[in-house]
Length: 193
Image 1: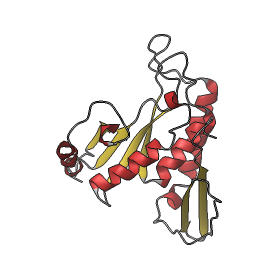
Image 2: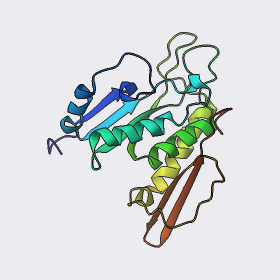
Image 3: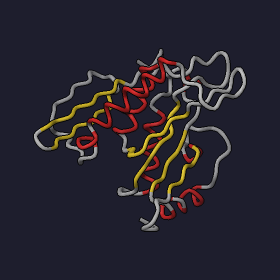
Image 4: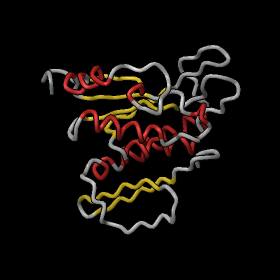
């Protein structure tokens, strides 16, 4: 830890990602952040505005953040769990919330936070409907129950995976005689299921 009495964390916007098209900060500036923090986080919000087409961008961002920060830096992410910016945006479905969480864990997040805000009509700080609230509670319980397995080193040879051309992101772990296999089928069109 940078300071043994407290954790130093920093959340940056996803402007370090080439795929993100709003105002950039220089690469040199981004390279200064990892050494200054114990936990480096980012957010890409809203993801639902892409209607599931770019659900994998959070995973991609974590991969890019890992390249930026090195192999040992603790990484985190803030995920959308709500409606989003306008009336045409459906917000995140429970299935998308769960997929987003597991993709984040597969790609190295050790911290996950949620955006519960909505902006239309008008700003509400906390506006998760019952369906989304239940999805967040359920996936949080899953990852809490599986924490020991999730935090063990990856073992990519535990299972043989055949995806037949589909993009499937995979987590394979083993700890104290238990094995964990997580598969997330990343659909590029449609509802992201």
